[in-house]
Figure 1: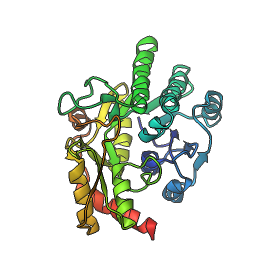
Figure 2: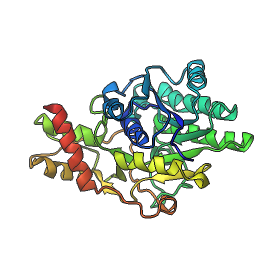
Figure 3: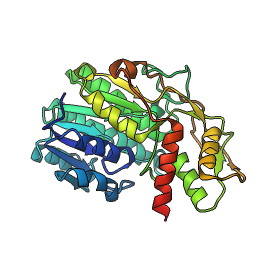
Length: 320
């Protein structure tokens, strides 16, 4: 599907991955981009770059879980393509597990119903590698069992199962993107922060970084700009309109090694503190990206070293 001239809506578009996706979409010359974000963790400032590039960008500060409001917006703006990224952070699922689960499922169902009713033409649903739980086989292919460890992950898995059920029952087609661990500028650095912004912020404040658990747990880290670019390119592949695609790099990095890399970039050679393991933490993640490489031949990723340096410079500039 060509995105040029299309009317696009992004739920969660003022968030971390969402705002980078909006940046990437501005380069496709769409007719309009509508962002729906209740600003729970998203920030209007995250859309600053996109607004400078694209004057037909609108932010709607509403909650996508409100079905009537979402449906009215889809109809009023004559939306053709929806990217669904609205969620609440994994860490939030320990504060309010029911709400974390609910957000991930109900928005997906609202959009599946909009697709079934012909209100929209295409839905690109963002899942998460967290649906897999800890790796049972490495690398983790799209058919890896879903064994979620947290209410957040359970909600994501339930949304994915809903996509499959609506597909089987009603014949609709949905592209499901399953990102692994994203990092980069604009990642939430406050409540529910991930390991990269948490470590960088501590170093910028003159505090020691922290390793939770043994630090041997691994993740497949991908620079957020790469994820955004890949999501746009996957949307254009009509043969993938009814597919699930992992988006990662295919390389796993231990958390302790990641933190040591960040310390080197920051010029820090002090102590690294330890804390107990985070509840529900998965022990190993590494994406099988064979399907992604077939879909996008010649795909290149920003190296972890370069991506971390760019991220460090961004966080350092925001602290000054």
